[in-house]
Every structure is written in C-alpha cells, then in structure tokens.
Length: 341
Image (cartoon, rainbow, N blue to C red):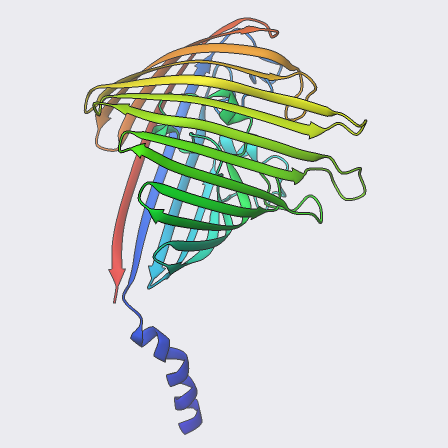
C-alpha cells in the first residue's frame, strides 16, 4: 500500500504543481445554395473549385467543432468536421481520417518559441476552411488550389509582435497520410510594417510522387499583404507561383493572383469584391485549367449574434466556358471558454 501510494504521489505531483488548466471551444456550420450555367452530370462546378462545389443544390459546405486545452506551457487541439468542403479536399485520405479537422499537441518552450505537431491549418494562403472569416463568400482560386490543411511539425519564433517566423517539416502537400517516405519542408514569415499592414511570405518544397515513382520536386511560394484603411476598408493583394519537375529534365509551372477589397459599412453590414486569375496549363495541381479569370462582388449581413448571411455574384471566363454564378450562404458560429483548477 505504501508503494502504491508513493507511485500515485509521483504520478499526480506534476498535476498538483502546474497552473490551472484552461480550455476553449468553438463551432461553425455553413449551408449554401449556388446556381450557374456550367456544371457536369453530377451537378458539380469546375474541377478547380473545392468549396461550394455544387450547382442547383442546397447543401452543407462545412461544419466543424474544435476544442483546445492548455495547461501551463502545454496545449492540445482536437476538432472534427463534415460537409462538401471535406468531401472535396479530403478525397485522397482514408475514410477514417477525413473527419479530422485538427489534431495536434504542442508546447510554448519559451516566450518566443512554440512547437506543435499533428494536423493543423495550412501555413499557405490568406483564407481558411472557416468561410465566415474570409473577405468574400467563395474562396479565391489560388486558395482553392493550395493546401487548406497539413500534417507534420512546426516551430514558430515570434521575437516581437511585428515579426513571426515558422519552419515546418510536413508529410506533403495537403495530406495527413504520408504519400511517400520523403518529407516536405515549409516556411512562413509574417511581418507587420505597421499596425495596419501585414506582409506574409510562405513557401513549400517537397516530392509529391508515390514511393517507386520518379521523384518530382515541387517548389511553391505564396505572397500576400493585408492592408487595413481606417478600420473599415481591407485590401488583400495576393500571388502564388509553383514549379515542379516534369520528369523530362524540365519544369512545369502554375500560379495565379487575386486582388480583394472588403468594406464594413456598419458593424453588421459588409461588401466585398475580387478580381483574379489562375493558370495550370500542364495540370500539376488540377487538370483542364489553362487560364481562368474571375470577378465577384458580395454582400454580407449579420442577422443576429453568430448568424451571418452572405451573397455573391461572380463571372468566370478565359479558356473555360464562360459562366455567371450566384451563391448564397447562411452560417452560424459559437465559442466559449472555461478553466479547471
């Protein structure tokens, strides 16, 4: 009995001397309806669209719940999700992994250093899987055709509130299950020129071929800036460029750019506009997209606390069939926190 008590005391002693454990939770759900002229037999829009992909259907784009637990310098994050966003972006994953929205553990090693390992949001792009956080209703073409999530280990150094540097070792390009025995690497540098101007530079390098196939190294860079003008107007210029070995001694390239503007008229009413293009003539990340151009305008209204209604009208042209598309979406979000002592 004395030995059992001693073991129990040793195991529980760290818990007794640590600070209290805090936790936060959040949830999000977004339904949508979209209508255009160009869609395939399954009523799906173009292959380069991975969010809000359905034509003439009321559907769930994304629903997610997430919890974060923090005890002292340690933290853990876990989340699950479902919806058409998951169907499109996680199609290559085993079915058992697709419900994972986030799953990671980490530590704040020093005030300036953080390490985290697992499944987490991508370090690439100015838009995320949570639609309400974006400046426009639908995602930019460069966002839809670059990673929304990734798995691996990331280390972040934040010397001051104006500078953040992150290095990553990843399983690959938007994957949880490792496609090969090699690893990819990534970087992210965020710098605030002023409280109203953020500059982001993100990169990726890795082999995206399966084991046994000829390696083809992929290099990718994402550059954007978020500029706030008098707390009402937000401007986001963004550009992506990628190259990958073609197996013939040369390189295949793809890329695109977007310019987004969002204006807040009142605390509950916003408008947005976007012009953009995307090109992948050799089908590195998506096939059948030699040159796509798109413009859109949107109107957003908060109907109640946590309830947002968004509407968008877009025009698409270029090497694809021209199309006019309308999309409407209703989203709800909630969050909270607590503490265990």
